[in-house]
Length: 133
Image (cartoon, rainbow, N blue to C red):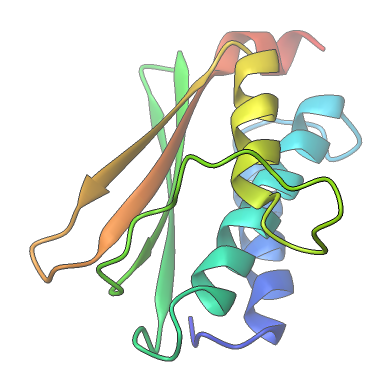
C-alpha cells in the first residue's frame, strides 16, 4: 500500500475482511482490538518512515487455527523505539498501545529485519480465544 494516510483505513478494511472470511465476527472485541492494532502499525509505517518507505505491506497468517500473526512491513531501517509514551505528547503512543493490547490478549510483539533493510513488526495473538468471545 502507498505510505499515505488514506492507506491506514484501507489496511484496516483489508484486515477486517480477511478476519471475517476466517470466521471472526466483525462486532467482537477481538476484531476491535485487531483493527486498532493494524491502525496503529499502519499509521507508524506512514508517519515514522520519513518518506524513505514509499509503501508498506500488511500480512495476516493463521497458523494451525491456533495463532494469528499480523505483520506490517516497511523499508525504513529505523526500528520502533521501546520508549514510554510522554504524558503530554500528542503522538508516540502507538507502540505502547500495541504492546498493551497484545499483552492483554495473551500475545506478543516481535520486530524482524527484511532482506531489503527494512523491518516487519509482528503481533502474534492466540486465535482460539478470538473465536470464543
